[in-house]
Image (cartoon, rainbow, N blue to C red; front, side, top):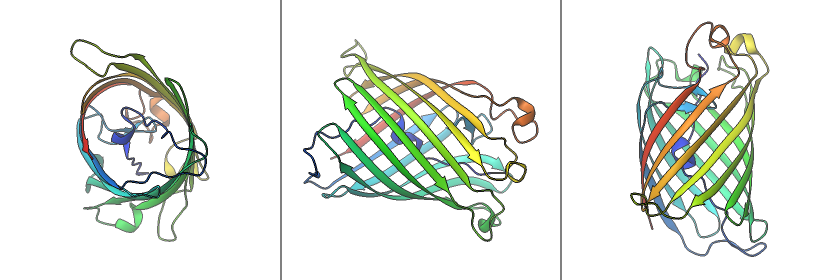
Length: 251
C-alpha cells in the first residue's frame, strides 16, 4: 500500500505570508504547536485512517532567519502492521516581497511500528509559493517523493493550488471570525500498477471558524477516482465531509 502522509494540521486554518520587506527575514525565534482531533485523516484526498478518526499533534521551532524544524504525529490505519505516523521536517521560508514568500521543505515520513520500514518510510521535497492580497491568500506547491533503492513504491509528484479568504471578522462563538478555503491538485506516479492508484485529481473546499487558539474546520474532500481505482476496491478515495478541531499554542 502506498503510504501517504502530511503535516495536515498546519494547513487547517492556512498560513498568511509574513509582512516583510524584500529580502528581510523574521528577527525572533519562537516555538509553535498544535493538537487536532479530526473525523478522518485525509492527505491529497485519500484517507490514512480507513475513514476513521485521528488524533494528531505537532511541534515546530521557528528560527530567526526563516529556518524551521519540527515533528508531527498521527494515528493511521492503512496496513496491518502500521498504526503510527511520525513526520520529521525542516524548511526555510524567504520573503520575496512584502506579501509574497517562498518555502522549501524536506520531510521524512516515518511509520514507527512498521515490520519493514524500508518498504514504508519515505521522504519528500517540496517548494511552496504564497501570496497575500488583503484578505485573500493564494498558494502553489510542488512536492516530489523520489523512489528509494529498497522501497517498493513509485516516484511521486504532486502539484497543489490553494486559496483562502477571510469573510467574517467576528462571530458570537468565534471571536476571530470565519474564513473559507479550498485546494485542487494532481498526484502523479511513474508506476501506477506498483502503487495501486492511477494518476488522480484531488480537491477540497471548507470553512474554518476561529476563536483565539481554537479552530473548527468543516471540509468537503474528494478525488476523481472511483472505488475500483482506489487500491483495487477500497473506499478511502470517496467524497467525505471531514470535521476537525484544532488547538494551537506558541510564542
